[in-house]
Length: 106
Image (cartoon, rainbow, N blue to C red; front, top):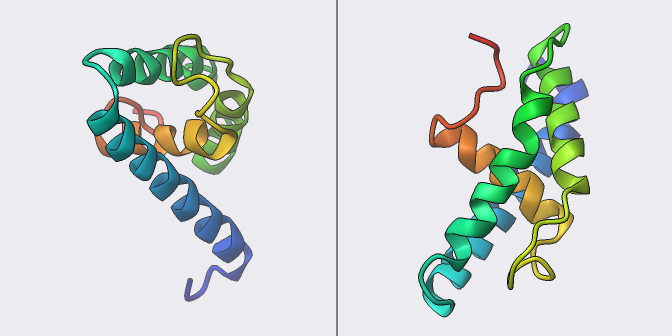
């Protein structure tokens, strides 16, 4: 990233997380019964919401803290064993794209 070398490694990792979640979503959307994937996604979102609501000195720290919490989540259901850390963290970026959470506090 031009002018932001200190964030380059993190940027690459975040992209990997995003696409891990995207691949997970597409695979299980087509290979599970209705509602299973939706339940998994809702649990991830509900699990990070309390951490997301806290105050942070900046958006980067907010994102890192929320992703850390997402990685610790142990969702229930059939997809729980398949939802690895990068998938759970990547879902946070998916949610940000869908306007379900914001890295920058409004």
